[in-house]
Image 1 (tube, one colour):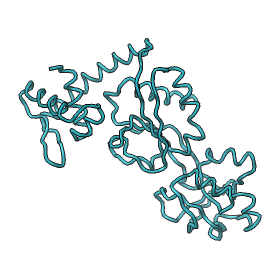
Image 2 (image 1 turned 90 degrees about the vertical axis):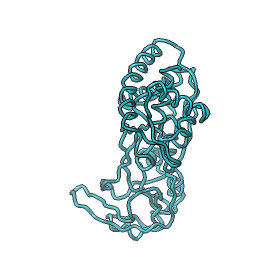
Image 3 (image 1 turned 30 degrees about the horizontal axis):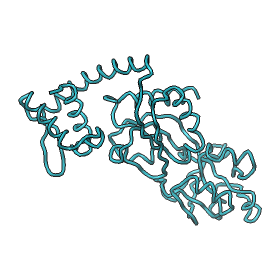
Image 4 (image 1 turned 180 degrees about the vertical axis):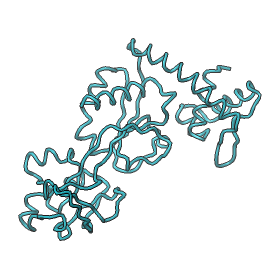
Length: 299
């Protein structure tokens, strides 16, 4: 029995709470995972998991062994990572999921510089504007907003905070008038994000620090910020979007910011780097995490 391999399989099953999901992540069959765990239990002469038809849970002995495995595997991973950083042998595939709007506007240079450093890694990027389960859907890492994170077991490393602002097109404002106060927005066509967790109540804070609670009834909604941006440019109404997404439109005059310098209270979108485990990360994922983190820290 390859003890280190068996420990890695055991740790993956413990994290996924499933033999099937562990097998999918390790790209092996379920029987291979089952035999590996069984061999480890036989070697230790102890049961590591309690198994039911719906769930796999660690026994008390399994929990204790997992803590020891993490220490050992983490040290091995550190050694391998340090070696990998001094060589050009980092290869393989990397599955990344990202918020579509932010990726299209900002992430191309990040991936370009990463590929320049690690040409042996093939990146497969999926863009979406819905909630995503990183583990169940088979992604290695995500660059997503907090509203997209479905699992509560992920490691979430904050990358950036994206303020949202109300915007509309000059054509829409010429036809329906320009709102002067937050309350005026109630009389305008609102293009709303369907994946926003708030109700129709939005709070706006003025430069005098006065807060207005405004009830906005959507006339059009979408789970895609890019769709809302396009609909706003087309003059369908006003929207409240991340400033980074509409930055170019504001410069070209395709959109105008409304009731500035009023800000959307608690309207910021938080962007996170998310991945399944702080430990046992393979070299591909570790290099990507380090690269993205350093890139954002450097602005």
